[in-house]
Image (cartoon, rainbow, N blue to C red; front, side, top):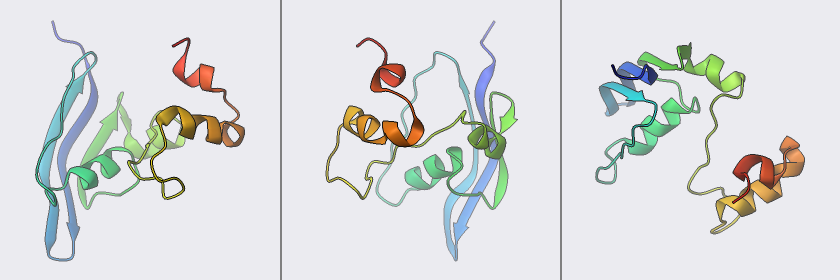
Length: 116
C-alpha cells in the first residue's frame, strides 16, 4: 500500500499575458519519494515552484499540501521558500542565510539544521 500524498496538484494553470507558463499540471508526491523538476530555460519550472510555495497564485487549479490548500499551509508556516537568489547576498550557503535570518524568525541554526 502506498503512502498518502503529501502534495497534490490538479489542473494548475498560470498565464502571463499570452504566455502559458504552467499548462494544466497534475502532480502527486508521496512521503519518501524523490523527484526532480528539469527543463530548459523558460519551461515554467520557477513558476511552478513559486505556485507550490504560495508565492504566486495560479490562474486555475488546486494545490493541496498535507490535505490543506496552499494558502492555508503557507499562513500556518507549513511551507517556506528559499529562492536561488536572495537579492541580499551574492552566493550565500543555506546555513549562512539561516544564521543571518535567525533573529528575525527567533530560531537558531541548530533548531533548523539539527546536529549536523
